[in-house]
Length: 103
Image 1 (tube, helix red, strand yellow):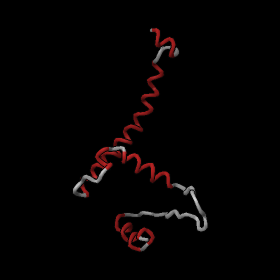
Image 2: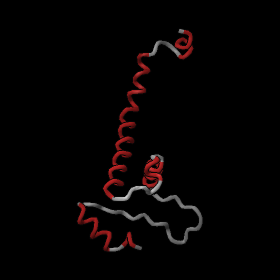
Image 3: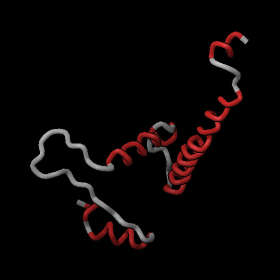
Image 4: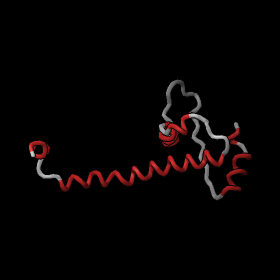
């Protein structure tokens, strides 16, 4: 497999100081087997798949694809940073939900 060979390690060493860990399915196990940290990759691909522009391979060049991936990632980061602001607005609400709905 290509991701286990020296080609990948050489390519990564050219890009920077990367460490790679290959998670393999245990031998002899049949059926579903939960693999550690696999969900991180799957979740990231799912997040990018929610962006319409990234759901299909529309881009003609790698540079524009990279730019759209960066924009999608920035959107995720901004939403994550803005989430605590929504919770802090509750400090300014008066009383309970019942009191707020009657006001």
